Figure 1: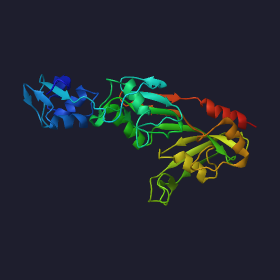
Figure 2: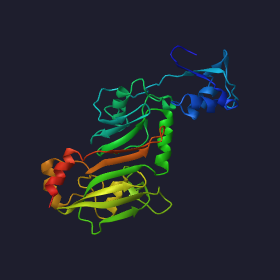
Figure 3: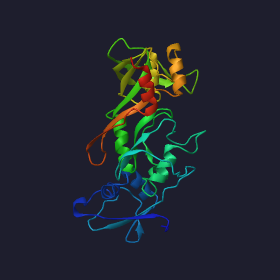
Length: 317
């Protein structure tokens, strides 16, 4: 075990007598997930009494002290950058960020820096979970580069896993504000249509036949009629790539400014040009979930950003 390792120590209390080692350590060191600890044990990173313990199923005895050597997070090609972030909530396990339009969530081809992950690496220096052994915050979900709004980021393994479960069972409350072309005839509706990568253009997402893609459900509600447009709230039951953009376009109401799924109508062209509005009019305005560690219910709201507000004002009846 090298000096570069992060050294942890845990003593087994009486009530954990007979527990599996991985289970006991997960309970005593809640910043690490059981799976992470299991892999550390198997890799020879845990010792007791000067002897390595390599079996996660080892039955523990009260009073036994275990020393765990955790490899420090490795940044790989991601670098910490001092980029301003709007943090609306932060605690020891997670944080909620209000992302501006134009910021990519994580590095990828064509965007190796200047991303939210680069900013978080700087902001969370020394307080990262090291999920997968890599120094990057736990990006549990994403929103498109040109969509603004709220995201939750996990700082510990256990928080990441707990949030991932909520996203998987669709219990997260996610609501988007969108300005769409045309005025919906109904006051509300639901689009239940599976999505998959387009077979024609792999950069696009398309509605496909049942069984060929992932289930996607969007519940929308008319908030305010505008000039041949409307402000709508979209509540996500699922969270697929480009879901709101594709679903709203499929019912004849594409998002204003959307360069991929919408064609700018003549009546909106001058307004968008005059405002230099060059993104889809979509904002992640509400995010609610159960805190994966404390069990408390958290709800956050973000006001519509200034560029969408100007668009809204220019389209008011």
